[in-house]
Length: 419
Image (cartoon, rainbow, N blue to C red; front, side, top):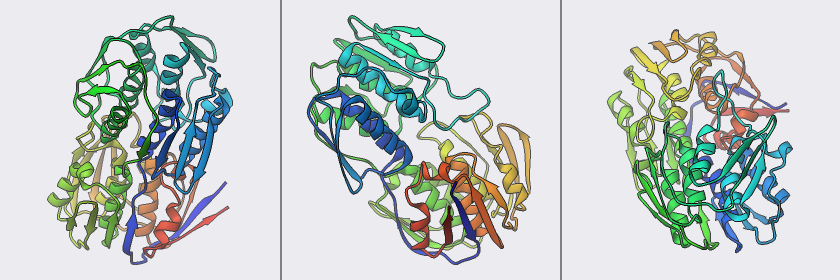
């Protein structure tokens, strides 16, 4: 298993480019199943979830041509309706293949999707199953798999009991080819949902309201293939911005969309972090004095849960006391115990809240990355820390950040990958 060895304290400077959005890329790959004509996807991050999605597509019978950060997919000849359990249960977004297969073949079977399990009870797929049933499908739950079938699907009026990004995306994708009008309420509003709808509309879909709580879809008979460019990863953008602030570095973040991280930029301005923005870049400047600032995670456009972990690291370097409250995922703050081992003054109130008293000197330790976002936070902490830090289980980090160590070395980080 690979690990990172990081020697902290090196000055960072220069430019770092943002890759394509993980949460856009892993949704656009199953979209290829909606059309019998090829789809070309560019600015594609070659991360674990993307590679597994391509494996699953090939197993279904798709023809795939790979290039550098791009791929062309032709699903014309697929005839399989069962997702291979050895592939599908390795990553959560395998559930996104279900809707397109259901609309195309009127039946699909699949195992419980795998991936990053956050929380004591894992991450259920009830919203997906309820959505398929609302569209007229029959769901059978067996011991190790799900079987969904429908003689005829129909439009529906569906309210999400919980705001869900992938749930919203799944229903949009599925309803595109379902006869009649579908109205989705209490939808997630992330930029990745807008990007999905924009592409589908460009290929013949009729979707109104993406990016708002209510989305209306008029079913069409056909979705064409086309070219889709994956939008910049806003979580990677925010992670790099927080890294620059925490290490007191001047770094230019390029190929990003500053509008997608306005909640973060607003807070950075409040706490004394200096920066400039352009149409597709953010210039982070050295900020010697940072004020502590409490926050609560919230669905978009609020502060993203995926930036909570690196923000916690920044607060260990801020002056004062703040409260961080996680509202999206259970137990997502438990990783902060590792920051305490590094020297941070953190008090855990309960699994949802921590108090941070700063600033703190951090010291290198041997650590294990528990998930993608805590992993990048540990990398940032290691860049600040005195002495070497060893981070194991970096597979979790690689799932969200393509060639992170290579990119960090270009701006001066002393980081190496050890197998």
